[in-house]
Image (cartoon, helix red, strand yellow):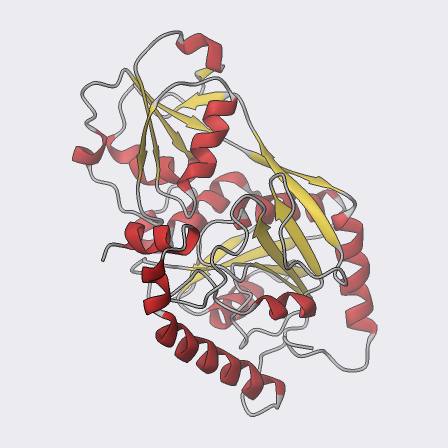
Length: 344
């Protein structure tokens, strides 16, 4: 069974998904035991001298973590703080922690890490282990006064001062089953222990706890940038009636395609798996006069780009004062006599 087929079962729950329920129960039991071991102190978390903010989710797939991480890092910088971002080098060949540069190979440092480095002025580090990566970053960059961990909600070895859990308002929790029967990394009850929830998109999601402050996020962007000539910009209306293809190798490709439709584009959609390593034949698309893609795709496609290829940058817009809430809470956490565990 392909990954795409499995994900389809999660969000269009036929009976076949429930065949995998026993495996899901095993996964959930192991995850629950692991959380308990950290809560009981039998497994220990590493605390750093600066506050740590974790951005993550409880489902597999894209919920908008990278745009929110960019927004958070830029907002903290604008308030005079010195953030540093830590990523795990998923599906990458890096064997040690290192600072990421915008021109680094995403196959080595990770596609999301290279995207973050290309958008942010603050240091971005990636490596196979988040704790070791944060330690290396702080040792090399003494000015960093807050660490943002991108996609680390389940990484309990890293102690944290503030947890943000993102939820895709369009897809919710799918069939609500644990991996591999469904998309759940952790049960919905886990959301009661986070500090803030962020709903990405419109609509309400059943099962979201009322006891946790909740903020709404949307992704905005309408101006496209040519991949081989970044100084060349265009609006959707400038493409006229050209034959358009759109590719997306992200956790939830349909969100990107919906965004394009909202801008008035008509196109043929080509979804790819998350973290997909593109090859030149994937983008040959001989019938397409224009190829549209996300920033994350562009990071991996730049080496064989042609003039048909355009990138749509997006930025997170937050309703409510999430930034003030984060700053207040991390300040309170550091004044407390004891640091809370990841599950407190």
